[in-house]
Image (cartoon, rainbow, N blue to C red; front, side, top):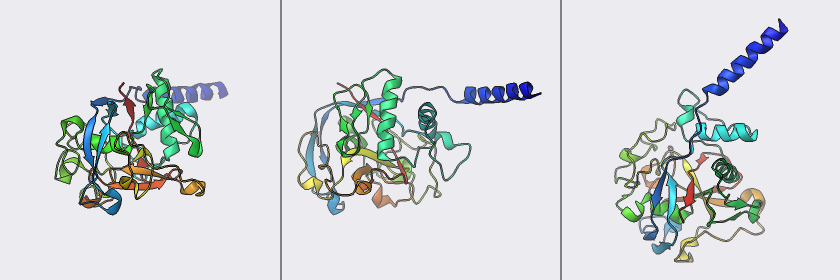
Length: 277
């Protein structure tokens, strides 16, 4: 009887594992290098002044945010606790993952690189984390890469809300979300074919955050402010983009900037990029 029960349990576990969706690499869109005007005269002080930025590297950006299905596989492979979703249900797997820290996102990127035999971008820990932008692996976008892509990149024509001047066409936000996140890819994409850049979930970027960074940002390949120095570790702030399903239309534009503590989970998710050359 004991053996029979053991075999039954083993069969159930095997069935559950077999039921997991097969892993596939993220769908990527090429964003050609170029120049654009970053920020907006309509924005908050932290989103001004408008300044010309040149990106010297083309890059590949994921069409979709990393989902719970994507991230749960990473958790299984690395024996991590799966992040919780406040609105669990049948659609959980296709929703953007949330409740992940900036450091979690970097670990995911290195894991994803390993799945494809690519050179990882990240090394080190804490303030000493470094990114090899010339590596073949996955990483987070810089703020400048994110905004350039949201605006339509080399194609342009992205509008205020990454594909439209009407947020209802491209974004889940306060007025239409029903106070929940939604499966990725249900709204209209931007001209590059990228989904859910505005609203839905805050997206971690590589950059250390500073309110006044635009006033001193380099003109070519800006990477964010200097690390925060003596500030206590739990207050180290990283940049986020895109707003969330809880924000109003004014706070989910392509130029909207925000920040959160690097170790904080909260309503934070991410999408991945790779340097194209």
